[in-house]
Length: 217
Image 1: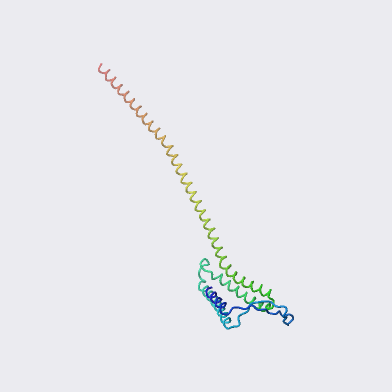
Image 2: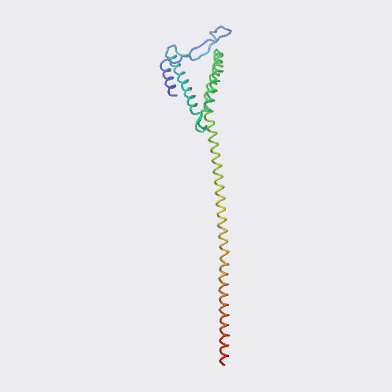
């Protein structure tokens, strides 16, 4: 981008393009009354040199992109766009093969030539941008959905664990509350049994003492 900007700036300052009127060919003859306006390269050698430099810079960047895409062919699509860049380059080649000859055919028709040039530029730029950013957006959306589903599953599992632990704590508490009265009843029964045994022992002692008194009399 920086090289293109500098070259275009130099081109504009040194030898800018010129606006000219070109007669339209009608039946093989040029009519001076029917003309159209267009920009043409300047007459100096600087325009030709700068135009060639711009073409070389863009073509070199394209070759470097293809080489780096080939080097990154083994990486995952999450971290590299080699596959999509290859598809974009193939689409560029198809556009050039189809569009450039048509440009020469409609050169004398300014409306068709302008529309074709604009369409070629739009298709060239959008093919690269869409093929790079749309897969990234799709991958990002898919990973976001997976993260949301994972979070929901984790939340559900934590909720179930919390409910089960709460239910277990409640059952243990109820069991303890149930066992405490039985322990109290067992304690009261034990004390009653001890009292009965003490009463029986006292009765036995009284009988023994009565028998002893009768024996002495």
